[in-house]
Image 1 (spheres, rainbow, N blue to C red):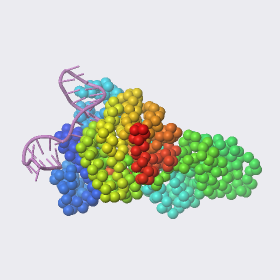
Image 2 (image 1 turned 30 degrees about the horizontal axis):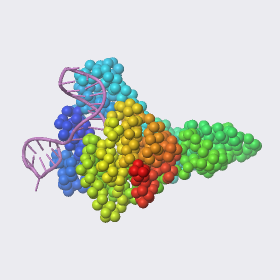
Image 3 (image 1 turned 90 degrees about the vertical axis):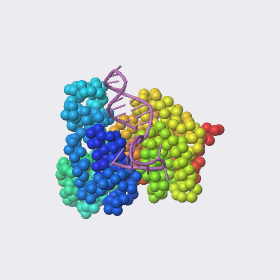
Length: 602
DNA sequence: GCCGTTTTCGGCCCGACTGTTTTCAGTCG
């Protein structure tokens, strides 16, 4: 029973109690306890053994004894009994936006609906609208939610796969028969959501590599098991394909499998125009003398799968992808840019920018603490930032209107600023900037007065409510917020949650124009669920001179690692060190934070 | 179920929005 499992059980208990219609404060007690466990720095088993669990804030005698039982015996009858009261599939229904515990309970008890499929059927048969509290509109909303749920399920968030994907590659690398191995496909390109994982390896004994692959831990089902290609289903439902090729074919196969399809088509057209031919099997000269029959047969020897036609031309030998680009008169194109969005034209002119690197970040600005809805204290967050090598860290807890997130009042904000000043006065590292994630209210005004905002080092302004407003209203709201001289950064500009909630409608052209005109930075929120502003908009923002700030939206120490993911998306958006403002060293950052305010005074 | 210098009971975070109602329940953030 590890910590994550324990957290899951506590949260599930809370959900079952909710379904039962238990006292909502009891439900919350279990949720709070789950949070408390999650934020523990010490080992739970140790706390149990020493009888100190009930001393942890949020865990009382009752829950402490349940956790102890679970940790020592591996069982919890209380939880098991709750599970027996409702079918497990009912929990899936609760994932649908618009369906909470009360509705799920009504659907289950009155219509016997226990899973998403039967709910869909009941909606189509117009049976749901008859329930008290439900109507035609609700029925339609549920149907739409089911449809989106299904569409989302076929995809996975990039940021949540990184660890798994890297482990998989490590495992394959440990196979003695593997020469080279790499992730490919949309994952390698850094698409924010991916359908499956594509992996490429080179080897002299492909069969042995395949056998090794299909029996790796974490493989739940083998979909196909061939000599050069196998597909498996990993635990968690993610599909993974492995291709194995002879080492000489590896660069061509890697380029081909990385894609995108559109990029590959454009590359092949370029090859044809130069009297060459590019495919997954190689880059060939199609004009001029063909290879001698002897050379041709020698070439096919090591790969019986290579099609006949591929061996009849001169192979242009490439040791890696860079050689392929060079052979086609192009500078190297990083995988993130291979979307056929102008990268080939730029590579031809040698104008592919030097993309920002994760090691170039010096600090960041959107971090929460236990003062609002974070799991770690200000000091803990600061220490974690130091371990990561950051020179500075901006603290931006929620503002008072975000009740659900325990937003700070003016008084509590002042206390936090005091704590930050004390930290800096001791010359501790990293340097802390005092900020806020200030709510943008319905009409575009901010949650704090200008006087309060002026007392802070910086302000992140974000929308957290009213997602159903029109594009016009949302846009006006954001524009007005950016006009405020104290708003340094526009936070997660579209509010999207990948595979869960669509962005609210907003005119991003106007938002970018306004950011440029007012000198407001736009956030690239690096939370794996957000990645907002989307990479597709950054080139436009950059053209207009808008600066990007990569923020983790961290709610616990470990979330600071999201920065790396943010950098991947910034790279995908063609951004360089100069475009990402938090690559500035501390001394320059002090000045940069004042630029917009000074401009306003002038 | 947790918490406590108002300490063993009685609070616990609040408001917007939606769709269902005819005065409010459910959901969400």
